[in-house]
Length: 212
Image (cartoon, rainbow, N blue to C red; front, top):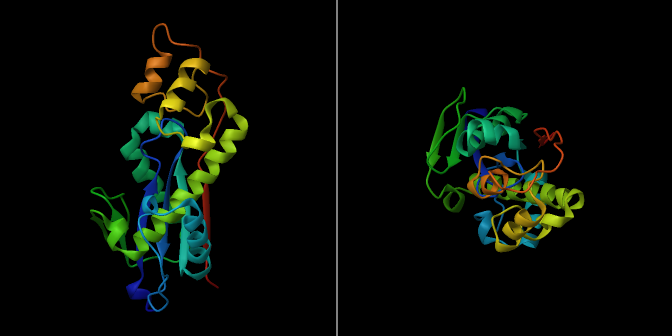
């Protein structure tokens, strides 16, 4: 593959949840070796995402996953934190792309050509691959957080504002991994709200791998 034609797909996972970091992935696929079954991660089963994630990691020219912390989400807002995670993912790639294609309406600030594509996770293979890696990485972290905070049942809803999650917030208060700038969490921490749990530090994560 020509170094002048390395297209990187980028997508995020976790803008809507009330807890946990937001994740992003960047993937450069081998144009000569298509991966069957790539699609928007939300349209795939968890098992299918896991299988595809393994294949993407083993066959991609390069891939990287990064995140923005809950503290960064609360400080910057969720959109800016998502773009920050995207930038971190692209910058963590071991191979520099010639162009970056991002799912959605907004682009992170990068020192290379970048373009946003609405519904790109459905139409661009590299973006679909990125959506899968970001989703799998975030879901894995939420399962880890479930071990630390079993009362919230992050294993079932991954931090999204389900009835079960909202009921747990009202009963147990706010944990260190909840996004305090989000309205349903604010309602718990506001006047008359239940006390929050002890603060813990939870920093950004970055992972990457590339073909030899």
